[in-house]
Image 1 (cartoon, rainbow, N blue to C red):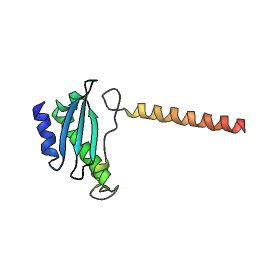
Image 2: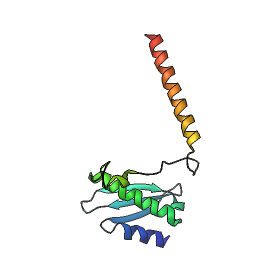
Image 3: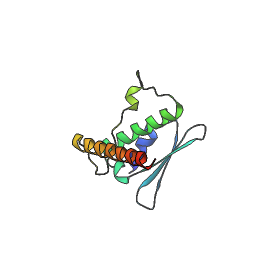
Image 4: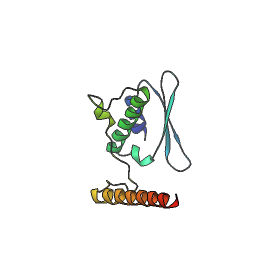
Length: 121
């Protein structure tokens, strides 16, 4: 745990870093910049135990800081910061077939609402 906290201090030297436990077992990470503006993020305690997940978390925090400062562009050198993996609720990647099914369901529901609206009018 101490090594993970040190990684946050090393990754964000221009920020004050605070990590506090939450009642649900997760952690509250707070980064405060020189102007006093905080960035708070709830993180799972397991994330700081995995080096890969820790680096992903640090990258996401850097991206959020850049977005907040208005430093990101959708094109050019900064475009790589915009890309990110979509979160899933099963702790695994979302499969293309699942994504297609979800999109199809969403489109069907939208069409049904439009038909119901048209019939109601």
